Picture 1 (cartoon, protein in one colour):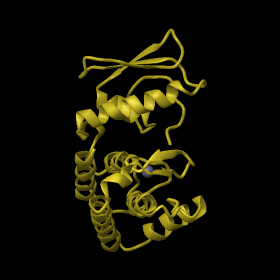
Picture 2 (cartoon, protein in one colour):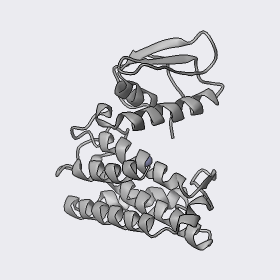
Picture 3 (cartoon, protein in one colour):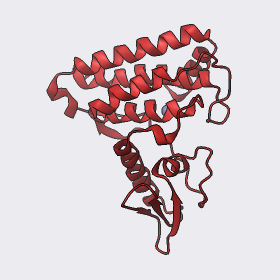
Amino acid sequence: MRRWLTGGERFFLARIPADLTAPSLLPGWTRAHVVAHLVGSCEALGNLLHWARTGVETPMYASVEVRAADIERRAALPAAELTAAATTGSERLLAAVDAMPAGAWDATVRTIQGRPVPASEVLWMRSRETWIHAVDLAAGAGFGDLPAELTDALLTEIAARNDANDQCPGVTLAPSDRDRTWEFGPGDRQAVRGTAGELCGWMLGRPSTVDGPVLPRWL
Ligand code: ZN
């Protein structure tokens, strides 16, 4: 997990382009919004580590409104300043991870959705953010560039989430570059094909050439 975390920080920071005004893969968001969101995520997840370490309840964000306003404010910064903030935020978060006492990783904290999780989940939450949003920058990286095990972990997580949603159609994912499948939803499942990376992008609701049914929204 620590490997995915550090690798994801590097992967994301290395893919921030000079031009942040172009659209990202996320509807209504420029690349600057994506970078701004990642800067906010460093602080938010740092808050959870602080909570776990001290026992003092420190939510990720003061409110969803504050979170959204912070993204807009940061997205309006000059590109060089915003990029520097992404680097600083990343360094601070990794330092906070290194400074965590071993026993604190089991402490229970709550995500923005109110879901109780062990503090160790922060490593996965942030890894997910860096790798996926690096692709969202629409600056050269694709879902096929993610580490295979991380892609598989994402497919497993989203499949489980979909399976728990009774609005979700039945699907069997049969990646052409894996010797296993992922299944979710009710029986008589539709086989959906593509590489694992392509299927991952499709499962995340990103623009995709994969031919499959409409899935519930991810996050
Ligand atoms: Zn995000």
